[in-house]
Amino acid sequence: MGCYRWYLVIGLGLGIAVTGLIFLLTWHNIFDTLVAEEKSLLPGSAFYKEWRRPKIHPSWQFYVYNWSNAQSFLSLPQEASTASFQELGPYTYDEYTEVTDVKFHQGNGTLSYRKRTIFRCNSFYNQPEEITTVNFVALMVSHLAHNMNYSLQRELSFLLHNFHYNVTVTRPIGQLLFTGQREPLMEQMRNLICNEKNIEMPCQDERLAYFRTFNVSRRSSEIYSMDAGIQNRSMYGIVRSWGSVEDRTEHSVFRPCDSFADLTGDLFPSRIDHNKPITIVLPELCRRLTLEFDKKQFQHGIMAYRYAVRVIRPFSAEMMEANGMNSCSGASIPLGKYGILNSNECNGLPLYESESVSYPKDDKKQLYYVMEPTTGTVLESYIGLAYHTVLRSNEHIALFQNMPALRVPLFRFERYYQLEEVKRVKLRQLLHLLDVGHQVALAGCIIGITIVLLTTIYACWRSRRTRKNHSDEYSIIGIQLRSGGRKDQLMN
Image (cartoon, rainbow, N blue to C red):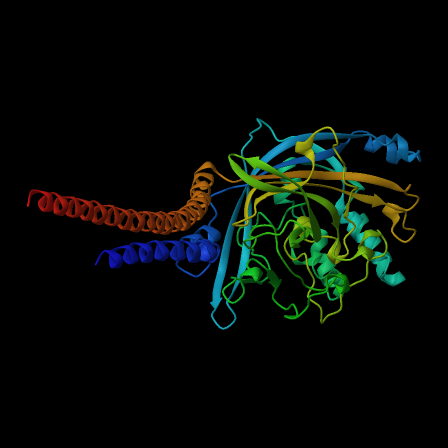
């Protein structure tokens, strides 16, 4: 029966070791399943509710440029270098995002939705600051008139004169950024030229502001479709505009009017490979960003990957040229229905991104994303862009005749996002569970193997000791019996 006892102990040790080994080999998959449950976008889940009404509000800082000598510069022909622009700001706002019209499509595991964004000021001023800048409505008319026939150009020139438009305007910062001002010329433009495909967007609103469509609470974005990662976890967070081609994979063949199929920088799949650059798209800004791995770093006690934004470009390089933009065909899906200036470069308005400014001495000013690679959680991000326009002469528009060529800075912004402490604590606990699982599985393997080895060694030692003891006992008894026999014979 003793042998069976050792066999049972050895079997128990082998069972513990094998269980630990299986758990060690499958723990990654088990943990990924737990993460997938935490990040589930199925209707009714906790993360779904958070996605629809985010509790974290990114902070935006806006800077605008006041044209301090606009009147003297435009009154007499001068050199472009004499124009003086003063940067004002920052004007700080918090971003509140709401997802509406959500529908879950079980067949392909996607969510279709619209997006609404509102900016709320968190810095107050006693009186609105007045900003002098380019009259973008007049500039838009001149820009669009280049592609029109002569008679229509002259009619637009007359409308600018009739409504007493000037090259510059002076407005409060709130109007300039978000609310806009009612523009009677927009009504006339709608009647005259809004059936033209290349100017469909500017004619949809009687007001024009840099971020007008963001803060119109009743207006949502175009329809997007996002992969929830149910069928393929690596596709989690991929967003397509409503009419994008499902099997399109080559970004290089995209055109300015094409839709997109990319990450948008809000959600990322798990298990990020730092050897591969990440491409994200900002549809509201008509920009595609390339994130390249920079370094590993600890962020609030979490090991994270820092990605630098090395490339910022429009959806197509041809839009980099101020006068090289083509109108979208009627069959295409134009981007920028929801963004700055009621539109952006994707729709042909004269608004251009300025060259990115590098800050080699200040690491915080470089554009970056910081992500936890195992769960794909964004811990921190910083995006900053600057925009300008160009004044040019137009011989058919009286207001812009003899206009000196001038690059006019308009505004820039910095968007900063940071994961709140409550979510960081929860993330640390989840990652701690990953470490504990590895440790438990490894400990199981070690304990099981140790039990087997110790039991085998002890069983061998016990067996040898038993055999030795038995051999010594029989030898002594034999000697005593032989000795006793000789004594009896002598006595007899």
